[in-house]
Image (cartoon, rainbow, N blue to C red; front, side, top):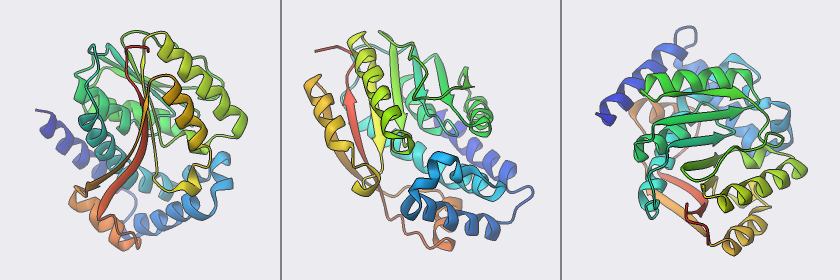
Length: 253
């Protein structure tokens, strides 16, 4: 059933984001978006990743399925949680796809998404509906919003901490450690490139001190045809799905 839901979601993404843009236009926007992530990272905090219709479409059509597949592979590879989560809390949720992957894997009843960008909030809520997941996203700043998380909650921060300023990222780290101490599971996912995450060793040490683990992942690419085509047209070559993660299980140490 979940495979049918995922296939239907991917088809709905095409209809939603190619209604007013051609594939070539989305591929050009994807090149600009990938350049912002690699070469112009200082602009991300000002919302550069989503500042045009083309970039928003590229993010939804390419990065949302990519993040879904990577998260799906990571949560399947990690040791199972001690208890089935009642909810997934997706902090900095973007389009909601990463949190949705964990929720589907866990059979979770509810998903909560938090993101500061109004377009992302609407897109995440749409994603949850397409995948048959109860829950919604809300407009919140991940660096300033207290996390209501404890036993029964799986907290995810996927591809979001790298876009925060140092002070906000430090505040988020303390909130995540506190959530784990209260019984929540915590999973951080980021690109494998160290340039995007110079703060990673500090976070890794804090997670290790709390009984967590750090991993680097390389999975064979399982990108669908549409996403493969966009990648080639944008000059990307995702022959592998790569990421790094930090994980705190739901039983505090």
